[in-house]
Length: 363
Ligand SMILES: Cc1ncc(COP(=O)(O)O)c(C=O)c1O
Image (tube, rainbow, N blue to C red):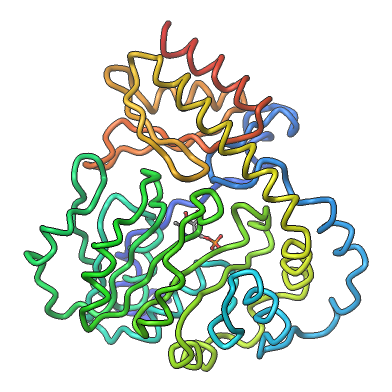
């Protein structure tokens, strides 16, 4: 008898799969802990949760029973005000993830290549390969920077897209402007993923006015606390915007997300305060981590901190923290051997984390 697998696209089942994040209620159940005991420092979400202002507006939302506007008129205009550009420069999607997928769908013929510099956000590889592209990864320097002077050695034959991330996840460093300028001068689509823009307060978005091959991606998942509602956006020239508007699914930004993002933009001061606190907490946490000899701690412009364990087993430490309900991210790729990434949580959460982490590292 024929199997269903025979109908799948070539290569799909051989694809590298994306490691998903486990929801807190399921983690709590698995660990036998009450849900409120879970300290989630593994996905760079907003530790203050969804803002009260957003919850209130969601409670009053009138149009959840009708389809959202496929032209995204109100959404694009609101986001454009926040960014300081025209609505014709914006496309919104179900998270920055959806926009990365749409860019691949727009540009890639089977076998076209996409360049990136690793380590970086692991979803890129998944989405490029799912769209029939070939993922070309060039290793970053030991400090995770990209050297502009070395770029001319990279063979750009067959490369259509370059994916850059600023601040980069997981190292937390910024994209160097001369690196971006090098790629903008090539015949390539250049994507700058600024998912963590609000924590870095630096952007390359204004370059869309002089470069029609640039798209800057942002999200409401991080600073604005809407990861569960799935909404992100791209900033780009009008020509590129028209093309993405044409291919996007009509209703991927749902009505609840529309209400929520608009409320976030109307109450920016709430998030500005949270960001200020998180930046101070990041600084204090880095200083405390640097006091521990066992750790090599990297500087961060984002809401997470990467560190390398010099002698202890990072996976064992991560697992012991998990038993206590504290979740952090473990990496063990060739360039991130024995590394841990800790999202910046609330001050009370970081206090608990630091105590437990320090105890485990100095035992
Ligand atoms: C660099 C980067 N880009 C994009 C995303 C995904 O954003 P969204 O939730 O908007 O799909 C993440 C999420 O962790 C990320 O780290």
